Image (cartoon, rainbow, N blue to C red):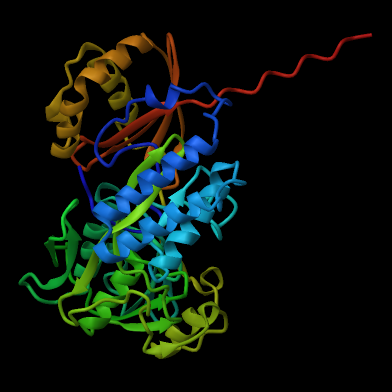
Length: 454
């Protein structure tokens, strides 16, 4: 299922939004032996990127200039010394952004972390919802770091907002909210709209590939369990990017919140991913956002706060705006009660679903009634490949729960007769499978030899 995404992070997990990814492609190259990254690989990547910019970039004129620029750079030898995919990806990203007015959605992915990426383990969340707290004065706090796929994001947001419903004010911390899906932006915004009638929020204006024509996808508010009634503050920083900016901009345009903090990054385009060859992919802007109130967006200028403050002080300043006198700036000190935390135990029924899907796929007889419509659609499209792959795995020998992954889905290590795979799976409130995927389990390090007795 195609889902419009905004942000540097495109939900990079080893699964599709609704469907199983074939493990065969992941196993085509033996571990530790990546394909050679030579002049031919660089030339092919530049050719693919240039073609994508000419046919898909949101501005045809700028797309042509970007394509010509990287073709000239290749011809002039600018990429000749870049023997590592990530170094090449970083250089290609810089060259493309230089021609496109620093479009921050342009990112060539080369297998390593992007420049400036946070180090260390990812923050645990459910679909991007990290925590909800009650602070002094009955002020609520909600930390959202991404706007993940709706099967993950919506249930977590609903539980958080239910716990925050009776607070007199709510602070939504979007200082590290750097991306997500457009439907999840609309769902979050909708919690703060008082109207019973749908409200037009914004549009995604997308270029039709290989043409200079555009289509418009209107985004409207959607029903939520209730409408939040208190004052709303949104914390921003220069790290607030794309979907995070869209959330802040929509609330600001509708005069539903006070923005506190720093001007945001200024990335308003909608992006998709184009493969460039083995180990390389291009995130490219194929559309732009257009707010229904202002008729424009925040590209290149960012969302400007009503109350400017350094990012580190934004929580304290927002609390002062809400009539409090905080003595600290961090949530750990200020929290009086933790109301929501990402779950750490598996969903009831997820292990049974892994076993059942393995058996059904091997037989080529999935039970579509136990899947969401999107999951069923993608499974039907992949059925022949799934049957071949799972029948080759053989019978299940073991199933071991590993963790709830950083995005909030269950992870299992499944030992088959002929393979060991890592499953990621999520069930909906009705117990149906809404998201699933698998990838080869990483090889285990050899066991240390026992010391010899003298």
